[in-house]
Amino acid sequence: MIEVENLSKYYDGFCAVDRIDFSIQKGEIVGLLGPNGAGKTTTLRMLTGYLPPTSGNIKVNHLSILTDAIEIKRLMGYLPESAPLYRNMLVLDYLEYVARVRGLDEKRRLHRIQELSEVCGIQEIMHFAIGELSRGLKQRVGLAHAMLGDPEILVLDEPTSGLDPNQIVEIRDIIRRASREKTIILSTHILSEAEATCDRVIIIHRGKIVADDDTQALQEISGLDQVVLLSLRHARADAAISRLKAVEGILDVQEVGRPDTETLSLSLRCREGSDPREDLYQAIKATDWSLIELHQQTQNLETIFRELTRED
Figure 1 (cartoon, rainbow, N blue to C red):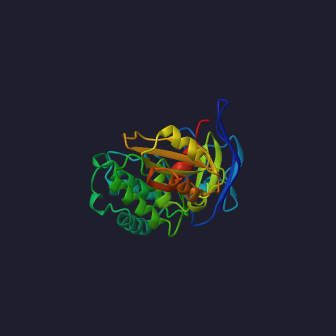
Figure 2: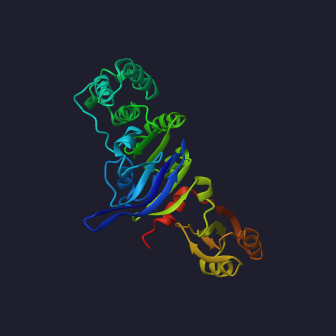
Figure 3: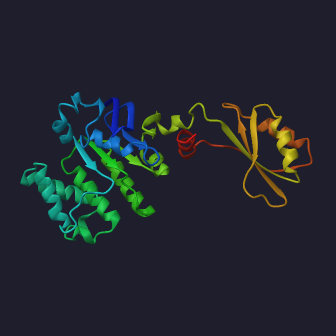
């Protein structure tokens, strides 16, 4: 449905997006992740036709952003990070205004506004001024705005930024309901949000794509070392580190946390694909140390994100 080909964007010699390629299938929810300044918002703005690319192309249903930008915009609903709402207008008046701009006739306009007021949970604030609303309610109005024209594609830039946990859950539910009929692309800094909402994530760092896969596959990504955490009692740090480093498959051992006088906490970096827990247990069993804890750390999206976007 969406094909991004060798896409780049420069600002006065600064490369914000550097020759990225990806495709998105109909019905997918794709999360665009990356640290501040990685190029997420610039990419979304090019996808929606708000910014022209310096080079490369974006195709939506075989239409090119270079020659068919207006037709592509008709297929999309876009919610920027700061929703462009008119504070002095009532919610109902604002949505009617947007529907008129979108070209909806009166019958469809009223039906669509009523439908979205239920989907976005804004029935009770339709006669409130937008400026009086909380940030969470403004985001709901912004989502209703983005969906008014019943677009095939929703592009959401940080849709839960600045919201409290309850509001985040509510916006997530709205996005999930919308995904039954639409393709959704969203950027977020909240990694748990991406895991809970997205079918697939694309991680961008310094304008380049460093990972692109579903969240389950990313947890098994190659190149990231496995980590085992263990806690001991009656063990000196230097003796424990020396002994455990000698176990097959252990690459490094580091003391972690602030251990008390009895407990020693260690983080062991292991060779990729290895599981040295049984050998570690045998090495500890041969001493007079007490083993309090031993488990292999599960890779999650947060640890993968940190590894892939480290400055070094």
